[in-house]
Image (cartoon, rainbow, N blue to C red; front, top):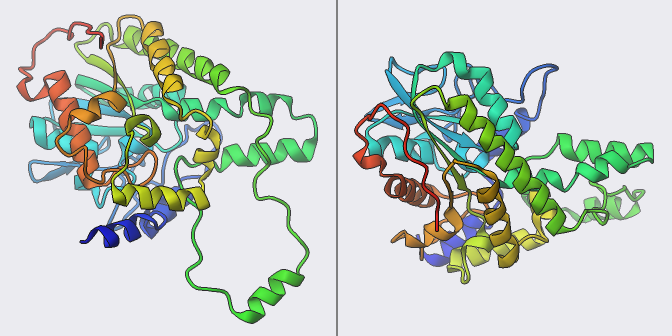
Amino acid sequence: MTVIDTASALAQPLPDDYQRFLRLGSRRAPQTLYVHERGYRSATINTDALGMRYSHGAGKRFSLAERGGAARVNLLVGGSTALGIGASGDAHTVASYLSQLTGETWLSLAGCGLNATQELLMFLTHQHRLGQIGHVVLLSGLNTLAQEALVEILAGAEDPPRAQAYQDFLNRFNEGVQACLPERQASLWQRLRQALAPRQGEQWPALEALPSPEKRLIRAADSIGRTLCQWDRLLADGHAALTFILQPLLPWCRDTLPAGEQAMLDTLERHPSNFDRLLGDTYEAPLHQAFFRRIRNQAGPVPCYDMNCMLGSSPAFADTLFVDRLHFNDQGNKALAKVITAKLGLAQEKYEHCRTPSVKLV
């Protein structure tokens, strides 16, 4: 594929399989933690009876509901990046590449839009299904930051219609999902009818009342730090090694862009997702650095790493890896998995029956 072809492909919305999957997954049931569509089948993404995406390794596929008798499993926890939105198939997610690189079973315990607290609730919901756990890697952070943008607005909207609009915004929140572009140009009659029709209100409310990015970053980092301490206490009696990795965000990760990513970014500027609107004022490097430092300081003994800094060590870093500001193509997911494997020494794992010593990134 030429550079022009690659740029053109990246400038389009997510494939139909992902769009349908995310829309179906927006349905919520009372007293039930948000999960994706159960038993979803497509050429791109497939889920088990619990709504968890399959991982592939050693010629087999496995998931939370279909562990295949593995005596020990590892967990990749997080949002849509951990889930692998953007991968061409289940075999090309970070969890699948970790399985292939380490020779161990890595299960996806990820869901689009989950914040730090919801990730922990997801684990608690399914803990009884797991046997021995080796590693728990949280590739996370951005959903918690994005959702902090709406906390004060939802709490302070006194006008009922406006409050309902913000609530609808939150209920239909899907991280990184782009607005669908029109398949073909509207006919003359369609354009005339649109021009004469009564003007509709904005699909989403204006976000001018957002708290400052510094305030939101502090709140989100503290929430993540507290949750990591809860994870640590929860896993203290076992032999699992817990690691937090701040997931990559394109503006935090690169100073210069490959041609394909620049074309994609130009399209996103014209058709921003809800997620982009919630994070748009946090892209500056000093804010990113302060955010990670505060997470690390609040996380107690839990080792914390910043993939925005580590991804640059990948030999593939100069290639087109992102499909939008936070999701990756197959090569990008493989690069993430290789960096995680090297940083945590997972390729040399010897099933030691003790917790990995806490190591801080310096």
